[in-house]
Image (cartoon, rainbow, N blue to C red; front, side):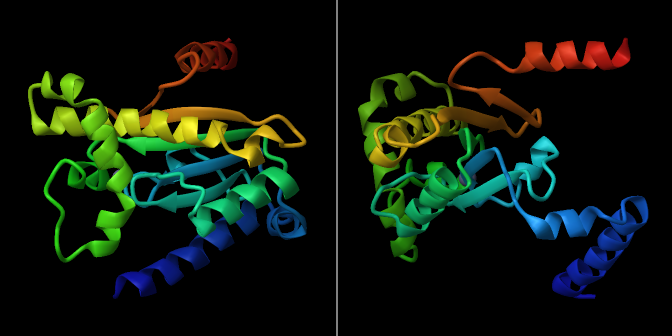
Length: 208
Ligand SMILES: [Zn+2]
């Protein structure tokens, strides 16, 4: 069976399972979407928003190589505009990740067979030059790339905060910078407080 064929078969099983559990689920899903969050993540197959157990209808999504935010990127701009103006999301999460191929590529010489990727990651190259002293201190290529992935998230958060669309949003928008540590499967916050305390409280409350 090809992988696309398997996806179609799995979808049948998935929709049947949900219908059995909750016959009104798809009627509710079809009626409206009210996501509270816009997720700007990397296209990497290992980092879907599903790592947060998000369900359909909960997260509006834009993904591109190395989770980049640029105001001349019409795809990103239109997603952001719709999320902020129509859906009025309260939160925008920029989620980068360790082991990011796009970020690693920015630490290597440009690959001639990837002109579009090279153009996209130009900003990460400049960011790497800006933080070269800090990155040079790190013991390995992987460690430099992982730190650069974090710095890249913070740079995208700053870029978002400077956008008129965000500054003039009818409903105030909180911007979050997260990194997915692939070795542990854990999300870590790079802006604001870590999320572990909230999680522990909830877990304790559920257990109690
Ligand atoms: Zn990536």
